[in-house]
Image (cartoon, rainbow, N blue to C red; front, side):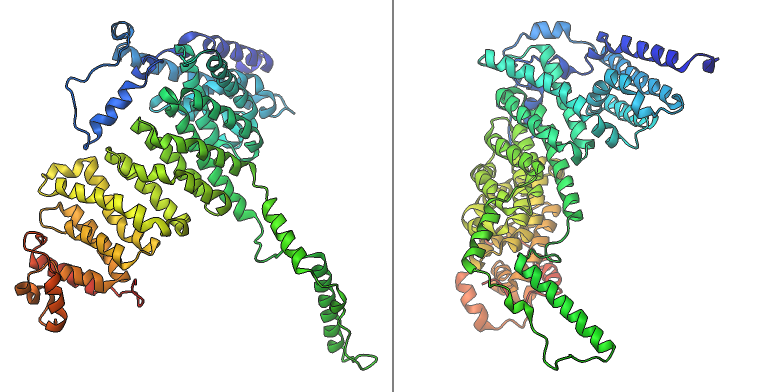
Length: 589
């Protein structure tokens, strides 16, 4: 019965049904409480959650004051939990309708390819399905499944091909919403966004995330003007809704990094194919021809006809002027053209650097996530990388004095990335700018974690302390710190070896001490020795310590009040593990 109906008729009926439901208001139903937040104020729920989850920010007032909005009106129109669940199911069914309708193209007429005749269906539901694919929860999972079904039924090999071949259509729809924001910002100061525009902008940002996740490098020419428009909108709404764009920009820079790495893998190595001048090429060809002739003569036992050595024609090539060569090299460096995706990364990093000092901790975290992806992308492009690192340096150092522990943790992650890719830039600033705020943070945290209950290990402060302690040793090794700076680091690590510290922090501190032992075992051994009273040094270090070596240390030993409370038996166990590590032959000077 189904095949008795012409394919064109079945296609028209399917498109009519999909159009009828997708043009209704069902897709605009609220699916979470975030859809009902007043668009003219900051996201109070996100800010409150960040304060409640942060262990270092005590509550100043309780109950907390609500922002000055029309709370009564919101509470009246706010849907119930049952209604939200029903709306989620409704949206999922509509998305499945779009995926089911794509099955009609599996039986397209002979001679027609599905990807060539499915344009009408994609124009109806692709934007909606793509935007919902970036939604968390059941809606996003359903949308991603529908994209796989559509790509399979419509003749595309994968979602990547589906998104890439329809990127122009998706970008045009995103551009319309961004243009509405720009027009509104030109007329209003400050910008006040209507609820419907904010909802459309949220969906467009989710579409951006899906586009950046699945598109290939072929869409880069279309992305650069789009990114500039996104950054212009970010300047207008960063006070209240910058988090909408930052998640998409992180996806964008992650995609740029993957494209750049793939491009470098397929590019020919310059070491294997050096750049030669024309004279060098001619000389190389003559030498190769001459060698080939000589080898041929040798094979056939022939000698030179005139009995003389072959003339070296390469000597007749005019010498290359050193001054001209230098000018040419300078011109090549100054006229170096970077690909478009690297310029996109540069523009995005410059805009996100300003958000490092934002008052909202959520924006500070998101901006550092974007910077991490961007700096990793530019790891091999030092001409672009180093100026961008310099611009972010002051704001990054200020984040180590942040009152939110989770911000300090993210700043340390960004610092470790910069240490790997721009170590030369950081070494000159390590002792004076990098280490002092890190060590001060650990010293303050040691007073909180000492004697804390077992539940302390579930807090953010504990996680940040543990991460800093674990990576402090490798950070010192990468920065090639001096012995004077290492002394301060070892002192802080010894603080966390105290018996009152949580076991996890003790293990993290010992892990970094093992790395520092390889760098300067004498300094680590000496500072550990200074923590033990003279009468217990033989028990901890053995009876082979000469008095002439211990005598000057006794003068510099701290008082009993300042000495760390570490059991001799546990210190002996730590030393036994350190003795098994082979140190580097050249200690730090």
